[in-house]
Length: 301
Image (cartoon, rainbow, N blue to C red; front, side):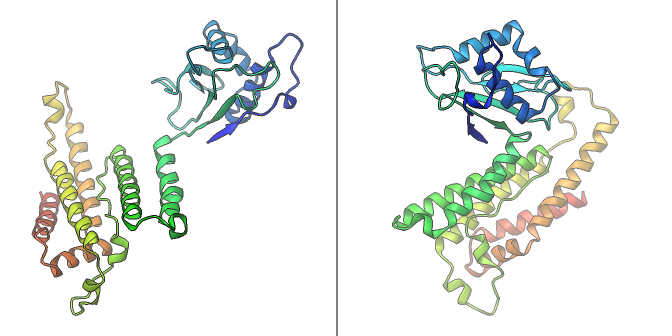
């Protein structure tokens, strides 16, 4: 979340104090709600004074490096250069605050308006990005009113890339939680369940949708093979000293992951995709069947 800095009229600086530092501190207090006096103690350290002086001063080589304010512990604050919170940035669910200069010219002595941008760094940036993409970016791109006049090929390409990035974000998110995701291809929502006695669904299905489904089967097969090839001996081969508890946790995690994959393969949309591949006599339908058999065999192992 990015915002323009408020003007100096919102702060009442003390005589002799830099009003720009007071404005920064006021925004830190509103956003992070630290303990009383935390910003003053943070900004009073030698390292913080150096960073703030460089940030608010003139930079001939371009815009100064951004600043990031984090909470490394209860009630405390830390000022870091750049946007990397570092390994000791604080609790995993704690948010931060960044300050960004908009140009090489330093802000005025009594106002940061137009010269500094600031915004929150979410507690879970990846989840925040995924939600933003799925709830804002993809719906905007999917709305036909937003790309009137675009060539049909351009519309398809933009939507395909957006859908692919959304799937990649979902895969990464679930990998963090130890789960394997099989993202649905673009156009899967339009496939539904193909009736075995009707050819109407086949007649209205675009070849691009069938191609997307076949490409998805290839990606899914690779991910499933990766799950099935995992060995409990991997920590030992990496020089670690796993305990029997590590072995039990591995097999428990593997079983839960395979069950998660199996439930995805049994979803109505995926079954409709498989039926469509069967109806068009796709060469990838046997690969889909083999993948399902491998997952079932892996669960029973």
